[in-house]
Length: 177
Image (cartoon, rainbow, N blue to C red; front, side, top):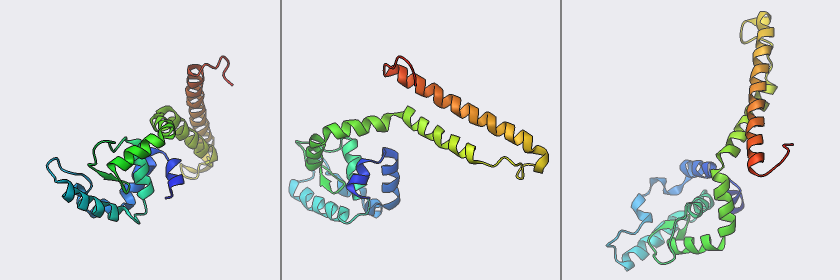
């Protein structure tokens, strides 16, 4: 996954990519975080080791994007590594990209939008099914199957319409299109 792809990807997909393909999955989780009593010189060596693990990782860009969205890192304390960057580097990147991150974090939290997307996929799936009845009793049930499918399609369309109307009203639309 490239950095551009990661920036355009929703949080759940980023997390799935990391869970499926991160090089750090088999490493010691403590490698990425400095302990409270750890001397700076020891942390610097471990930080270099952690960044080396991140280098070449197929999901490094996704990991970095997720760390930025989660607000990881601190401008004043170097105590972690995420996505191949130190905590201070993450904080600096987050500051530099704050407008974009605000927008994507908002989109990640937009559960209504995700629900609309899921409903639209289900509607397209239902509309594309063949209700000929071969799965459920042959031609004798064809009419019943068609009726059931039509009811599901109407219910999905009504749910989509209802959510869109509420969203549009909340956004200040006088007349819903």
